[in-house]
Image (tube, rainbow, N blue to C red):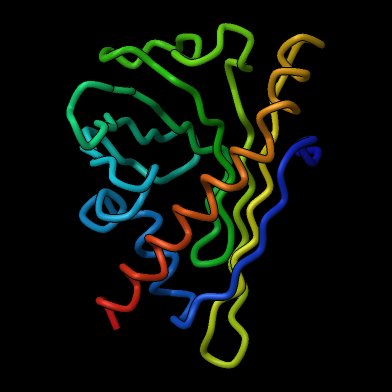
Length: 166
């Protein structure tokens, strides 16, 4: 797959690669750290294999904002690589426009790689629009710094969660 135009993040985690991979791919772990800070995540379905799907619902701290989303896994290479297409959805899993911007791309391609170095894990995440119109790409580009900042917050939650699993 070609590299998407979008964000590129790298972070080192003080945990072995197998554990980092496990918390990305098992629903009992994933729901404990994924998403915006303060939000809760209910994992409805998580089948990590090519063609498999993650489907879940995030709720804001006050319970007023509910967002459904899904990943469709394209490539799965334990414990080193995951590629998935991410989109917003309704409660039935149908792809919908983002609630915050009607120009947001329908699909975001994400490429996650995990590399173990001396017992620690170097995580690299690339993400960007898939089959986006010019307007969708422009909307994504405008929000990419905020999306990257949000992922950094998610990675902080991941680091905290990993520390409880060692």
